[in-house]
Amino acid sequence: LEFIEHIEALGFEGVWLAEHHGINDGYMPSPIVFGAGIATRTKKVRISQGVGLAPHYHPVRLAEDLAVLDILSNGRAEFAMGIGYLGFEAEAYGWPSRERGRRANEVLEIVRRLWSGETVDYDGEFHQLKGARCTPLPVQEGGIPMFVGAVAQPGFRRAARLGDGFIGPVEFWPQYLDEVRKAGRDES
Image (tube, rainbow, N blue to C red):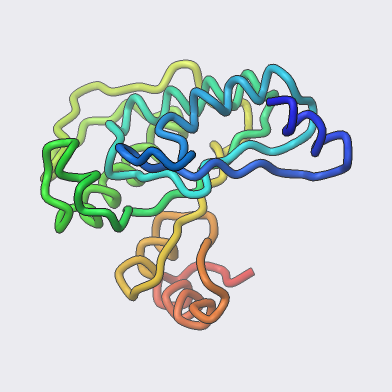
């Protein structure tokens, strides 16, 4: 936290917190919780997972936790997510890693709807919700910016359809933009 205070004083504009589970190498298993700590000690830096593992979250809890982070930070929260690539993380959470893309799609669809203030009924493959709401809502108008990580075609499609932007290697930018056009969204 002291280091983050220091880099903010130097003019850095963002903090990105990598998420992994069951690895003793300094990765953050609870980036949203740690982000709340950052919010209480900083004034300007934007706070994001970099990247968070969307399939590991329940969508209502994720929407609420990020909304609280957004409030604590006075509108400085961002959510950059991926689907994960370490099979043992999914297995530790009790589901097969081959489901991670479909799980992430549901999470992003539901979170976006909850941040719009909608009461959500949802009957998906992994989540069944009735009357779900996000209270409180994020302070950022339209919800917290969501950036979707990808290194393969299904991820580019996910980013184009469900995200506010793409996070990933620059060489994949053309494939992402192609999916943005296919989704009928504005490239800018």
